[in-house]
Image 1 (cartoon, rainbow, N blue to C red):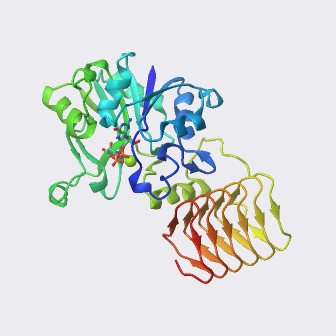
Image 2: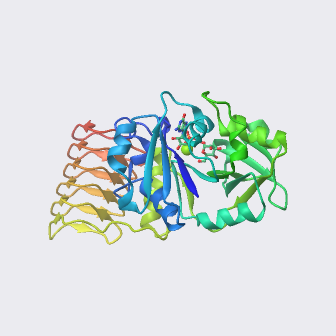
Length: 346
Ligand code: GDD
Ligand code: MG
């Protein structure tokens, strides 16, 4: 069994974090995001992994390397121009064939991939989609099934009018098991979408289209800042199990400072007297000056938080500077090297 990770999107909804860092390798709990996907594949014994790239491919290759650190063998395929989700699969799959596990490169889950493969094989499906239940399906691909798990309808990014006609809350979780029969539905060398083209075509052609619904597993698309921050808060809350999270590195924490047990600090951080770090994740070399309070936040490496700053529910990119006495309020997201003047309220 082989796997393909679709990691070529531009990550526009996660801007400004993705301006210099492509979405597949943004740091989550101080590790490149894709590592969580490589680990669930490795855990299922799937070691032959292709990364399908398009946007800033070199940066992704540099971070992931050959995959051996994560127990897999990674092969990189870069499209000359973005070919869409299905076009990317066709482009990468030509040389391979065989049953393939396909993952959207921005979903965080602890699902057991072998369980999904069993569900696929047990039902002799041409294609199996994993479904998640969400409160608001409008941002996703809405999927209707019958009681036996056959997919009856696929509607990408349903409009309010579509939603008023359905009470379905199951959506495409971005994890597919595909047989080579699906490849035949995708034109060669063209931009093509699973969601808008291939899934409707599977239904039209009457191929066996199967669903496997997540009930207890964790699932989240980390593709916007709010969700990206929430993934960290969920990790800190212990809601996501089974991953080897890094331990906090060696940092200089003043005796009069307080860093709670939940927070994760990479190496080389400095937390000055009477500063507080609560329920937060700090990348390498972050400085928190006297009497600053950082709570429920994620700060990338080498950023500096000035004295008396109050920060809650924020995400800061790499090398940011927050001037003294500033208030950084929930929902704030700053790109790399942002500089906020003293006393600002953002
Ligand atoms: N190689 C390649 N080439 N990858 C691509 C391309 C492309 O042209 N376009 C998108 N991708 C990758 C993205 O990098 C991402 O990992 C994945 O495909 C999905 O794209 P998103 O842009 O994140 O899509 P979405 O979140 O709006 O919707 C998708 O995911 C939802 C679940 O999170 C759809 O599959 C929905 O149906 C689904 O519910
Ligand atoms: Mg997404």
